[in-house]
Structures are given as C-alpha cells and as structure tokens.
Length: 511
Ligand code: HEC
Image (cartoon, rainbow, N blue to C red):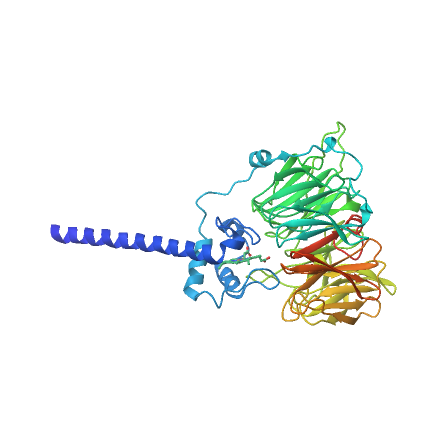
C-alpha cells in the first residue's frame, strides 16, 4: 500500500515536472519565435514599435481566432505581413497564446513617468525671432525620411534641402505646425513628442507621453498640444510653449471600459480637440478655449458622443461640422460602410454606402459643379469613391489599377493625384480630372518602386511625390503640364508637409 502510494506520488511528481518543463520549453519556443519574426515591429517587450503593442489589454476587439487570422493573412493596407508561408499552424497558435499572456511587468506610464521624461533643450525665450536662413517661410516642406529616421527641411521654391536632422525612431501621423508655421511638433510611435523651432533649426523640448502613441494635434490658438496613446489608454495635454504636461486624461467610459485612442484632431472652427477611439463606439470632443476668470488653463471637460458603431478612420468636412467615418473590421466583423455624424447634435445624420475599406483620413474635397464632393481612396479595392456632400450619396466610383492610400490636390489645381499603393501596380500614380471625374493620365515615375503621397507647393503649381524606398526620392512635377521638373534623392520619404497648405487647412490635403 505504502509502496503503491509512493509510486503514485513519484509518478505524479515526475509528471508534473515534465509538464512544467514542457510549458517552459513552450514559452521559450514562443519567445524565440516572437523574437525572430515579430519583435522588430512589435518590440521585444511586446509594447509596440511600428506595430501596435501585443499584450492582452490591447486586444479589446480582437479575439484569439482573429489574431490567428491576422498572423496568417497579414492585414491589408498595413505593414503587418502574412506569415502563412513562414510559420506552421502550431507555431502560429503558440504565438497567439504567447501574445494573450500578460507581460511579466505591467506597463505603466503615468504623470510621474511623463514629468520625469521632460527635457527642455532650448527654452523658447532663449532663441531669436527671425529665421536664420532665407526662404519663403510659408512655402517650406518638411520631409519625413523613415529610411534612416531623419527629417529634411526643403525650400519649396528652389526645391533644395535647407537642413537635415535626426528624429526619434518611427515618427507617426505627420508633424503638426503651429499656426504661424514657426514651430513644428513630432510624435513618434514610442511616445516621444518633440518641439522644433524652424526659425532657429533647434529642438526646444522633448517629452515622452506614452509607451505607444498614435499622433498629436495642436490647438489653433497655438497654446496646447494633445497626444493620443494606444498604450496606456490615455490622452495627454501639453503646454505648447515648452511641452510641460497640463493634463492626463484616462480614456474610460461610463462602464469602466478603457479604449486605445486611434487619432486626435483639432477642429479649429469649433475650438476643440476631437478624439477617435478604437475600443468603444464613441467620439470625444474636448474644448480648449473655455476661459476661466483667473487665467488658469481651461478645464478640458470631455463631451462624449455615443455612436452606434466604431469610428476608426474619419474625415471632417471643411467646416468641421460633420465627421464622415468608417469602421475597420478587426478580426471580428463590424458592420461596414460609412456614417455621417453631426458634431453639433452629436447624432448620425446619414449612412454612406462605402464598399471595401475607404481611407477617409486621407480624403480630400473640392467644388464640383454646384456642389462640393469628397474623394476617398480605398485600401481594399481599386477604386476612388466620390461623395456628394449635399445628400451623402456616392456619385461616382472611379476604377483604378489597385487599392490606394493617399489622394491629394490643391484648390488651384485641376487634378487630384491618387496612388496605387498596394499590389503589383504600386509604381503607378493616377491623375484624375476634378471636373470630369475621369483618370486623364497615369504616371510610372520609378518602375517597380512604390510611388505615393503627393503634396503641393503653397501656390499649387508643383506637386511633390515620394518614391517610397530606402534609396528613394522626391520627384517634383509641374502640376499643370504633369512633366517632371526635379528629382531629389531621399531615404524612404514617407511623407512631406507644406507649411502653408497644412496651416491654412487647404482643401486638397489632410490636416
Ligand atoms: C514589418 C512589421 C511587422 C512584423 C514583422 C509583424 N507585425 Fe504584426 N503588425 C504590424 C503592424 C503595422 C500592425 C498594425 C496593423 C493595423 O494598422 O491594423 C500589426 C498588427 C498585428 C496584430 C493585430 C493587433 C491588433 O491589435 O489588432 C497582431 C495580432 C500581430 N500584428 C501579430 C504579429 C505577430 C505574432 C508577428 C510575428 C509572427 C508580427 N505581428 C510581425 C507590423 C508587423
């Protein structure tokens, strides 16, 4: 009897050790797989780099089966590749289990961490108020070169670089200018906000507002910056002068649910910030100019607009009265299509039958006949949808050579430029006549290489296009004759931003 018992004990002891050993090899196997295939984009600590954090608190809408699908197939129109050909099904399952395990150390980034990260390199009052170089300060471009994490300041008349400086890694969401164009603010995916003085070509301050950050917006009075995070679930308001933190806003709803921020915007005519949220169907509006009697900062009281669907990606009309939004399916299915929300009433006023996956945040608008239209590329289908803003009906679907990412124009230009970002025709760019809504020309600026993201000069006479490769270029076109004028070598120039067009909310570009 005793023998039997001890045998049983020893056997079960052994068995549990085997189990333990197995689960730790499992873990090590998962860790190794993760390091080899995923860490370069999602970070060794899983807290996100150019890819989002992969920890359970990030997966509000994504179920394990959905994650498995994403890893197998990749995600259309993003940098998330497909691993169908490189990893076996059991390996993918191992990775899914791994990313749904809580990290050993809970990621924390609160006010203390934010304050401790703050450095003021050059106090703004220590710098002169006249530019130290000669150029039309309104016709400058900043070119973000993600190939080697640099930013080039480009003269928009001569098309010559003025200055090139190192940025934080993986800038995201485009730099934002102060209204006068003197300062520019950058956000990096790993949470750093930088203020740069273009007149003096100097960094003013840096602060880390989160572990993983989406983008930032500048209030139109130039006083405040807001940054939206995916990790932690917060938004942070900073004093624009030197980036001192003013307020940390937890993004939590009435039911105690928290959400990642998918983007922040400035609605200049409304004097408010708008927050798009990823994990519950709400849009938040935060007024920034409700004056207090004693000159204290505004209260930044949140107005929550509840929706009947998620809004991941959206476009404001020129008045900032309406949001035109769409939900991106994330593993699990959400009803697709677009909706129009009135910011004044907080109500949905129309549905738009938008097929595929419209890229609304890259949409533009122009006057067409006796109305105004919005044009949006589509990241799943080769088409550009043209929406009539009088009745929110699609008046035309322009067929293209493949899914596109950016569409751009200028009030003074008769043409809209749309790329064919995805698929075999990624080296093409279509030129659409804004009045006939037909493609009038298709360019192939660098055969075999991705060409994307056009931005116009201040006067709309020239269009600058990116060759989106490490040995890439900016190509300058005459926007009227569509002839090439100049080619400047650049390291993966992911985006370019014209001071005047961005600060004057030019209708042909995103803001
Ligand atoms: C080249 C960069 C890159 C690599 C390598 C990469 N990813 Fe991603 N991944 C991304 C990006 C970017 C996204 C965000 C896509 C989007 O915008 O929806 C993403 C999204 C995801 C998502 C969806 C997250 C969510 O919250 O919706 C999962 C899951 C994921 N990746 C898992 C993995 C795993 C596991 C690996 C390794 C086998 C891996 N990724 C490798 C770039 C990458």
